[in-house]
Length: 354
Length: 158
Image (tube, rainbow over all chains, first blue to last red):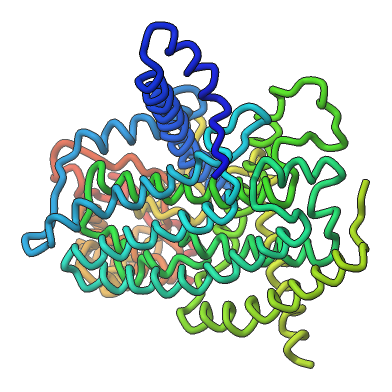
């Protein structure tokens, strides 16, 4: 397997100056891991703040504006409060699984972040099956949700967790197939090469009609996979309390909460990489300044995150049967048709190359 | 082909919904309905339909519109209103007439249901828009609505 650690190289060289080589390698990996953890813990907190602000603006409110300028420190204060809270649990809970579940969820969502190429040089883990790795990792999170729901010994949590299982397993199919449609165009699963292909035009332009259909299916299925409204039957407040994390408190609850927002970021980041050219600037306007790629990547990702928030504050929640009808009767057949269409277009050379 | 028709209709209705919320999002900066209360305490004006407490408006001659019919007292579901009245001789016509002595309103018991105001035939009591009703002693919550020395406005009873 061809694994290269792009940004670790410089740190490894720095560390190997005063360390044996193996220790320097491990040291570099730990440093990168800590940097990523710090960045994305804070990014997750600010995504929560963004969600609250956007929700407020959709509802003609102001949103949090008391802690710090424009409320920028609000979620920091919330996190501080959650850290200081007592960790409660049910008496008959399965203690081991109950404590394991939040880490399962947060670790699986943080792992997925390692493969994204934020810019040409800023990619921790350039794996040759990157897209496959992302799809695999993002479906591990549901095990944590199922564990949490089962181990809480609470019937509402269990119902919520089972709904999550149904939903994620169904929509996993659509996410995978819509990304596979784009892989037909790129011919590779490696994320850095997928972006390399898009130097002749973003894939949503290259693949025109089937790419747009694939993007729509991907956004619907991606929203469903993160268990966000309108697909948030997992935590349908009116029916289930808080769903699978009803019995969690303090930092364990915060892990679930943070994981939901990081998952949203991941879904948007995959869409950015696969459909909208990742760190490439539109029409190559900033090609001479490579580090600006980070801003293009983050900017595009946040546009898509905003789209998901727009969904959340517009659409009402679906019933379970409506959810399954949407997946199995509409998205899946359309997706399969779409793959055939894309294959024909690639075969006949009808793609648009700029 | 209702299958593809359904898909078309579904996408169209979803986009309609998104355009509605999108418009709200874009205008939210100007039209936010949030009141940042303790900051704008001086300028804050509550909206017309706000139910603060029941008051009895008096005009400049210290005259109110309450005839003492007790319909509000009967309409009140939890007895927040008590009316103390007696028959007095009307100085103008010389006849005996029912007049209120005290219109007592227990704000501490009131649930702001508004049935008394709907029941009032002469619009003698109305909603006030004030909302800072907290006091240190609950006896302050028992209010006499008619001002001392006030009398019925002429022409209300006709």
